[in-house]
Image (cartoon, rainbow, N blue to C red; front, top):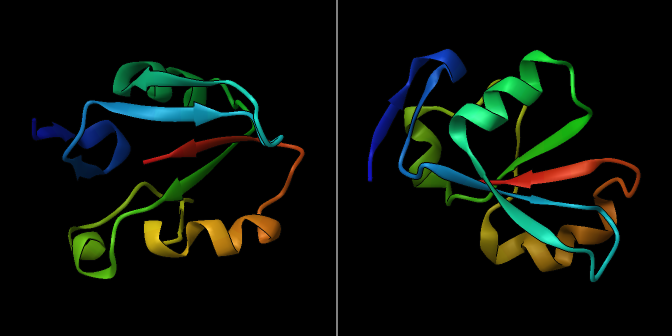
Length: 89
């Protein structure tokens, strides 16, 4: 479902995000767009990781997010900080 989320400055093609703890095997949860916005506004310590492919990010992304295409994610996991909650979208 496409949803315009101007508060985040990007049109997103999903209404949920995956929030994961940094540790391997940690639990994950789905996070609604509005809940993510609230956490970002509150200054939550989150690392936003945009896992879309290069051609998909042309329309924009969430400010401050890093781009790691999903196909590269496993190989790049050692480079991702372990002391912060991760949000994949």
